[in-house]
Image (cartoon, rainbow, N blue to C red; front, side, top):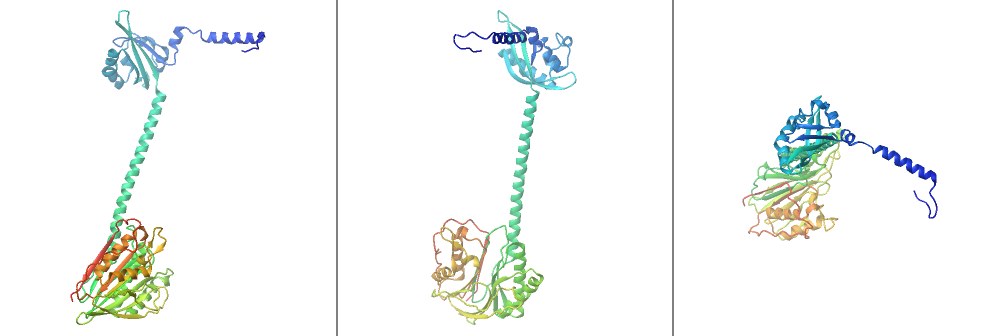
Length: 461
């Protein structure tokens, strides 16, 4: 209540204040006995041996006990559960006698109806005037809500740990499944290309296969096999798509070309047969599939100083001829269309003679379409490949493939497609030194190891 200076308080305000004071005075006129008996916590006093001498009504009500059945008849441990009694005898009581007080000890009391009451107990020893210990005063607080909260926290924690364990197990399982899948894909991928190249008299051969992703089957393929009578056939190509469907198409393409070559080894005829098979198998059924491929035959001469190569292309990047003098050029194969798109496709055969030290390089477009430069915006391209290969001359097929392998690794993440290489060449009349790996530019970043394999074969001269 406030009033201005020089003014007397309003009589009504004085009456209200007095009435309020009377109400508070009446509320606070509790006797000490009432405060003890009806306190919001349990109170009890016990002798030094634990015998209960006094207990308030609050604690009796919590436990459902009668006063006459407790005071002078029961010890404090008798009010506890078996576990609580054991803890009291072995820890609580000895510490209390040593320290004179204990605060906030969690125990469980047992009610008359069998319920367990979680409580927090604080005790202090009352001493006499000469320091002798007289009795123990104890307060008991109901911790049911706290226990429920702690149990909920524990349940949530257990659920979180269980979820984390399940997630970790799922991660491990997924990793194991991925490894098994990668192993299975690697085995299947290797089944789509020869495990090694055969030895061809008068010819050296080397191959390399780069898989862009261990999680997907690639669509590139190559092969080198005998036609009998000193003649050999080879092919290299790329099917549309990735994954199991591409693998199926690759398998059909390889075996069709092998069978067609044994029936009629003329390169244009082999591609015509493949075109008919793919078109009938896929396009006629409303699911067109196609591939690009170069197919050729090899016939070394009698003294193995020269080799005649005849080849035809079905929409594939042209073969690169690298003479011993380094004047590399692409071999034109006009008229070739994607294989399997049309019911009839024109193919023409080109012919070239490789002399000692000359190499013929077949590749898929993963090489020329690799992205280069700091921003990975430029393609490596045909001109860069021709210059790179020409600078290596004279180089054997194995040296050529080794250098190109280093080039592919230098592309880093710019190499995002499968790449197959097949190099064929006539052995040089004198040994050639292994060329250094010449990169068109410094790699922007190191490329992680790729799942690949490299094969080579060299025939005698």
